[in-house]
Length: 122
Length: 267
Length: 232
Image (cartoon, rainbow over all chains, first blue to last red; front, top):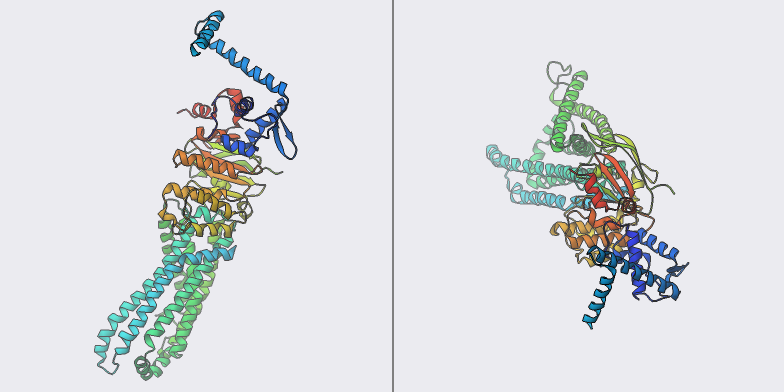
């Protein structure tokens, strides 16, 4: 199944985000080996060179590391994973607040609405 | 590479060629046993003539059709394989244009030569019945006198001459199709026109040379053609047209080579 | 390493019409390149020149620093926009034809792909549908270990499911030292598999850049940019 990609942003960035997402969501555990560039590219239906670039960028960020002969692995640095998870969370929260503000809610009102939704769900 | 190209050219034609010549041989065998063997040469010549002439006409038509069929086979293979959609594959094979040309020339000549040999064989089958040879024996000295050589020798010379002409006939077909492809949109028409123009040129050249070499029959001819010299006259014409054919074939080859090398434009 | 493809001042004139005029482009190895342009812009003319099916009016085209000839034809695997196979042949005969003529043809790979597509190798080509014939041709072309693949409209005439299979076939068989040049007008479908795009307009190159550069600098997809550039 090709990955769902937007049309207006660089593809490699979206590939990075998707792999990051998968790592944080636990699709890959810390220390796991990533599939090969070719397999990932085929899975995503994208150009292998673009996938290669996305993985190199992830390597630069430290989220994955490569071992010369045996491939790429997910970092075992739990603090880093946790930090990325928090970064992503705050990014989502920020976007959420932006949208609610556009709808005309004040911060306090947004918090109350969140609270209410949570209680309803229980 | 050349061998592989020839292999596929021959493979392409083998079925049609086999069917055409199968018909030819079968018809000749049937004609020999169902018709020729039953002719009574002691009968009234008029009766013989009236029954033999439609039979001969039929077989001349058959031989000509098979010959045209072979020519058509060469035309279709050359044209389709090099100038239509199939040409997109043929011309992207790792072969040079010279190899492509020679594959077609050699495979075409093989078909042509085989056609001549099988046609000759068919003729032999038709006319070697005892009644025919016995009838011929009576007029043989007269014929030998007219031809200058015995009929069998004469036939052999004709056969060798046709075989030698095979290559030039094949190249002639190809060069016309190659010239035709210079006119995108009217390729087949161009090829047919090229053929007629080439024929006119050949006729004019032959005529001119015949006059120059004093071979033209009629008031210009210095030698009066008498019966006994008919064969000498024929052989002189053969030599002349042989020479013309060799020169012409070489010219045609280079025209074809130039077109396929420099002017190849598949649309 | 020498560039796989180089065009310098490449010009092709038909009567009074310039199908290509003074085209200059160089392609390096190891990328998938989209050749994009509206109908009649010169895409197919360029492709035929690369394959030696046309002779240039001016300028030259070089593959691995060689003019088109037997040596370059060993390196280039070409898929034309039409059916170039002899209709009377059986699929298996065509496989041996390719094995005979191309040293880099991998008959095993072709066999596997044909089996995946459930194409009977004993069937004659003329009994197959148009779409199936196109797939057979693509299988043949992608089963070569070529250095340059030139695919003219590989996804033009097939349904979306077949399109996906074709793109997967291209991606699966692609090796990182080879270059694929593919022409199409269905940009959205292939945008994600391209490294680079060439826009060709009235026989001239109007853009030569990477997909991600377009997206980074312009914030839009190649498809959107194409529609803007070639607005009627």
